[in-house]
Amino acid sequence: MDIRLSDDGAVYGWTEDWTQTPSPHEASAGWAHHGLAVTRAGQILSFHPERPEVLIFGPDGSLQGSFATGLFEGHGLTLVDDGTDEGGAGESVWVADPGSKMRRTEGGRYEADTSEHGAVVRFSLDGQALQRLERPPHPAYDSTHRYAPTFVAVDEVRHGGSGDVWVADGYGQSLVHRFRADGSYVATIDGSEGPAGRFNCPHAIFIDRRGPEPRLLVADRGNGRIQAYDLDGRWDRLIGAEYLNSPSAFAVDGDNLVVAELFARLAVISPTDELLGYLGENGEVCAEPGWPNALDDHDNQVRTHRLESGRFNSPHGLAVDANGTLYVAEWLIGGRMIRLDPEG
Image 1 (cartoon, rainbow, N blue to C red):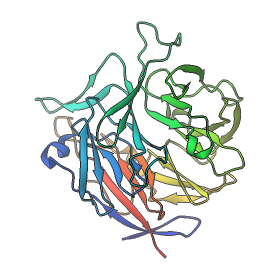
Image 2: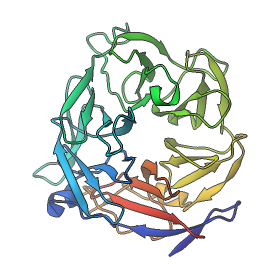
Image 3: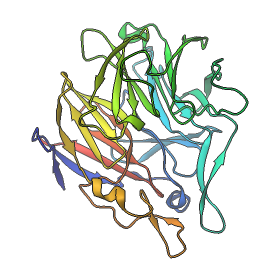
Image 4: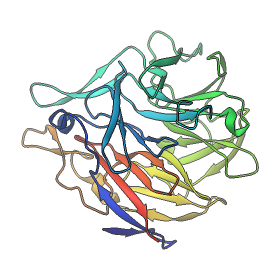
């Protein structure tokens, strides 16, 4: 089916559950909570809803590879490319793992399986662990406060950048940390650098290179806004406070910024920070009991039957390919993978 951007008029073809996810019985019970990324060759990197595995799909949804990570969750997937090989050998993926995973118990309830701290690890696309960032030496992390990283952004050298790696601790202390390419810690920002104030769940971060100077965008989800910084950590501006409610992930499609909002829509924003419209808006579903799932007769969470084609339930992961096709991963039991192909 087709869906239309509410104000701009652009049309996309909606295709859902188009991937051939391995171990489908396990996947149907797993509470999906992952990111997405796209390789130079157009492959889509995802994460199994139940197993700690990166999945590599072709644009047609066929499974083209996978590898185990030893982590809890592939919450944030960030592809980096040093451009050394046209065949893609220079590509790797950063995985931000908050160190927790909702798992179904024998009694039917979903409970959090949680480690002491999360992890940030870079893998080659054949599954070799290449680099691990240590928990930053910040006073916020005393013996009682968890480090739960949710996303990574890299100032890639191929774009003229420094190689610095930024890490969002979205589920821990609501901080964003800066590291050098060698993993050495540099500094931390927390939102108080500007007039907007402290972050509340900086869920995702992204380096936006559409303008004359690159900017670090922080999805300040708990506050329903984006905070922008320069790449030295100086506050720049506030974006979308009047039209966003739950920014969770970013992608750039041509000149426009696309923002996945957990509360059932995508927002499309112009280069001048104006809202062009929403895709698949379905905010009323978020008020349903048990959202993003449903509740059975014993108040256990089960996969919802309220999913509608053309309307989102809980967009969490987002990526775009070279053709402008948008890929969306939703946050719910069993997951839902949606592909939006631009028409015309």
